[in-house]
Image (cartoon, rainbow, N blue to C red; front, side, top):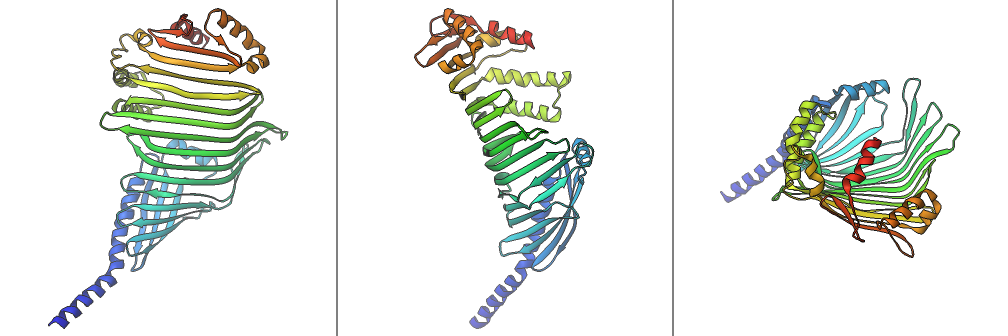
Length: 420
């Protein structure tokens, strides 16, 4: 009897192993079908044309169509297809599916390799081989790329990670101008939630240059990087974000800037109000009077709960001269009813300002000298051995300088308003 039980157990195990690829295939079809349904949105429509499920592998064909009218019109104008058919060869593993997907009847050397666990979590690698394409029309553009890739993972909970590698892109215009983009590297990890990204992202650019018809360099940006991070305190309902931009050099017809740094934060923002405002903007980027009225209650809540804007650092070098500034402006909690009384915003603000610029900048740009001399007389600027400094606090609608001199913020803003 024991021997029969052992034989039965062995037979059951063998049957399970033999049936397992079929089970994986069935589970895999459900996972892929669910993923396609999630791709379908206002911009792109997705559908499964056929799903031929086999024992150890499956053949899947899907269709992706651009339905956003403005995006569709742009693709048509550039001579690009607005519908793509993707063929996928899917292999059934013990606990995952691997797939190689390619475009059908499209001159675009793109392939996607994915490994999907049975719970839906997916690792992916998107490869683009060298590509050469010329758009149609009089103002045609020739696009050339070197081999590029994007890799990462995505979970069923919406967590996404990616790494971008794009060595070079060139755009040659029929008019003779050329744009060169080189050494693009990027990475990110986080989740898109309620209209905004929570997590970290970074992208660096080795070179971005524009050459004119005569081949001369009209614009050049070298070794630049953008970093973004955000987090949400769910208990307090507060959103924080930070943006950092660095650039080794920027050359324009107006001159050159070197060692540029910008570090900016937006913090303690009420997440629910911000979410509603983002949703309104996404529905209609150009707000009508009706939509403005819808936005007012959320704006009022933002101010009532308080938030802050902070320029943690902005620095650059012009020639041999240095400039650096930092400031922080806070809207205190309790700043309410601003729609009925906007004039109460400025007096409620608090903050600090610190700015430094070197003697060399004043020497190189004589038009600054007159303003500096006037500010020194008004005790708004103090002079040091290395240059000039501005230190001020924001209180009761006034900038209060280190000397005790006070200037109403409204008086500084009015010229800018009338200038526009």
